[in-house]
Length: 249
Image (tube, rainbow, N blue to C red; front, side, top):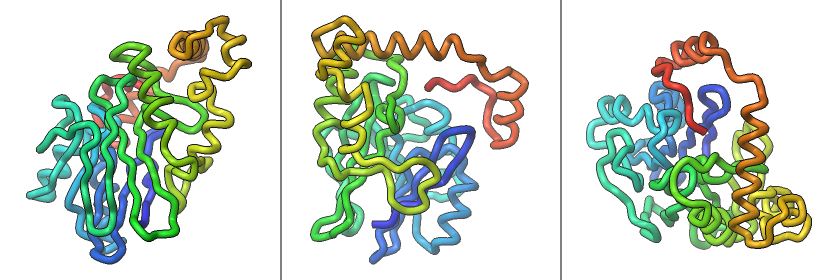
């Protein structure tokens, strides 16, 4: 299994997962389809499927154009709001692309229909990978925009947090700090809500309540930061051929 990381927009990534024996490829979170197709051509692979974590434009905006350019393309996800969706996935469903196994993990919190994808190959020395969209990031997590804090806690700690510690985002062409889940469990406060030091900081005892306080503290910090000016946002959207709709993160 080979993973190509494709930086797009300001701070987002698309992914191209390649089954090296069959040369079949699966894309994750297509925002800029023409950029993705450049990599597909360079790698000389056949792109058959798109896995979308959630419906926000910076993760799904490119689905419709990509489907138009590649007739027969399958677009999968867990939310009917995902652009060009061909089939809705269920929690725990497993997919197969050659030797690559995919387990679909519903991880609501950022959005109610947020799906993360856990990939591995049997009898392979390479560690598994998880594509967690905006549910979990390096040293952080996405804002809770839909659902309850209990759902978000279950997604982060009970679903993603229990994957094998060697699970990583990618090991090839990493454009930012790479991380394994084991490392995240050491320093990501949103995964450490049961630890005494984090509970003391929030003044709460129940893990879900601790998470709620951390999310509100993070939101207050972000509001205090200088926002991206509308002109700069519009220029960025024009550069990537996207709408200038403010992004939800």
